[in-house]
Length: 340
Ligand SMILES: NC(=O)c1ccc[n+]([C@@H]2O[C@H](COP(=O)([O-])OP(=O)(O)OC[C@H]3O[C@@H](n4cnc5c(N)ncnc54)[C@H](OP(=O)(O)O)[C@@H]3O)[C@@H](O)[C@H]2O)c1
Image (cartoon, rainbow, N blue to C red; front, side, top):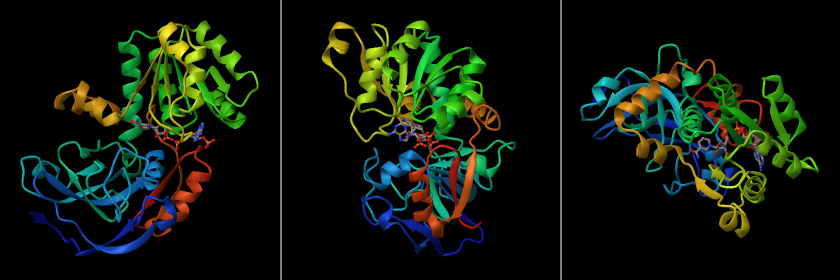
């Protein structure tokens, strides 16, 4: 293992149990050592994402047991590498890193990441802060457009559309001639998206939302929806869309399972599917294609795939930061950093 000025101990945010953010605290832990095909990243920044909130409550697709360091994605510099052919390539590089749910996450001064899908080189045009948010949402936005175009769709419905991801999908959609029908839950979010150039934005809190949704889905012949809300919303989407439509559920912000009725599935030929970035990426692309996708998305990080940053907090204030994010998610990412 190659090493340069790495301390023995580090500051890490630790979750004691899957009961939400209450047990989050900061402690001193040994700096982990990279094994075969792994690198050690000195962390620069890591956002709080909805998937992190789900993880804190034990509701995510990862099952690394507490006490555990949370944090799904981030950025930093590779300061040490374990044995394996790729490690030396990454040494000294600025990277984005991704947790694979098998070990500690990224809310710590140092994290070990796998050279096989857990670490991506940052383009020189991408800052460490933007780089910290350059995997999960940007690649998902690109995936949504690829699925849309691959299915021959000219229009899609998108829920929780004022999210960072939603804004990316809207910008990409405009660039690529795809009509996005946005569903949000507050008037301020309608204004936000319209100010950015969105033409179809519905508020699910409106009393005649179902009628509006039905009308606009048929107007644009929208047969594909990406649904982050689930619960009753999945059924509302299915009901509003033309026959043989598909709702792809990609999150569960309502904390409820997708609900629908048998008429939609059996007699109208509609389907509900799921999307999770990692499995989609590795089941549809080989390594070279993933690298090409990564390079292409890096070039768009300061434009179509940009994330706004609302505020930065040091790891010591992680619990406060998570609370602030939970109370108000729209309006930019909250970044956790080793130091401010
Ligand atoms: N499956 C995958 O691979 C994958 C990949 C990337 C992202 N995602 C998902 O994509 C979604 C957006 O992520 P992001 O990082 O872009 O989020 P974000 O910027 O933090 O924004 C979250 C948005 O969701 C809205 N929201 C929260 N709870 C809601 C509810 N019950 N009903 C309707 N809207 C609700 C928030 O509105 P308020 O301000 O009103 O709370 C906010 O606009 C998340 O659900 C995330 O898990 C999934």
